[in-house]
Length: 364
Image (cartoon, rainbow, N blue to C red; front, side):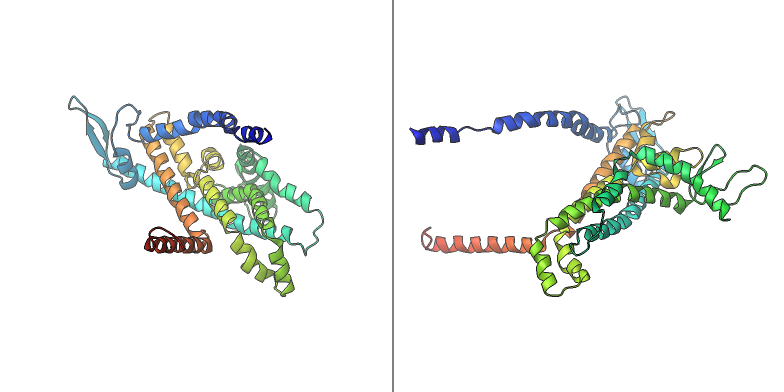
């Protein structure tokens, strides 16, 4: 009786309740993420207004700068983009993509160096750092502030709005770096906002300042997941801190480093809010901050001449570029030892199957 009751208890499955709990997520994902992705892909083959299918015309204009004519059912030209317009679209697309890559690399490289250094420093058992928790919280705080608020803060700090100089310009004027026009009494803010690398530098600094705390926390979790006996053995053998980092910490952090790289790359290629606010501010407008996301927004929501098809095609191209770079990142950061072990196991299994076939399917 008892064994039968136990068998009945073991046969009860709670999997259906798990599926019920995850249904809301998939419903929200379908309506707010999956369907917009599918609709964007469909829109990329449409004309300006998104009404008529034009095939690969939008992709040709973006990638090659070639105009295309498409004949309607009645024999009239329904979609006509000249080569000159296509070249402008193509050049703007390449310029926006170059800005996006520069802004991402310019904030990711210092961010990962700073975050990794702090993560190793905070997790070193030999260092007795007072107030570790306080510093972790302070470094993570910029991550929870909205990007729009940070952009407005730095606009007021670095630039000039309605003839009122920013705090940084006032300080630089005091030390003689920024000049003041004696007639109009305006401060020269070109050194920080409207210059090519100056404006990019401000955005890079903002992105690094906002996200290095989050990256540091993730790397710290990866370091704390490493077996402590490895560090103890290295300390007994007399290994220096640099040797421990190069031989133990950094190689074993490859999974979390790959995750950090891919997530940062996805966020960097989709960078929008801070470059958009800087790019569209009338006092500090600069095309050197137009990213792919800003490019897509301006083409889709252009009040005078909206180009929905081009915006959709640019979105699809950004998706495939992100996918391609993500695959490269995973390939470069893969665990080569684990792959070698897996190949060795498959080879042994294959050899065992061949041996079993030699004895009529019976393994000895």
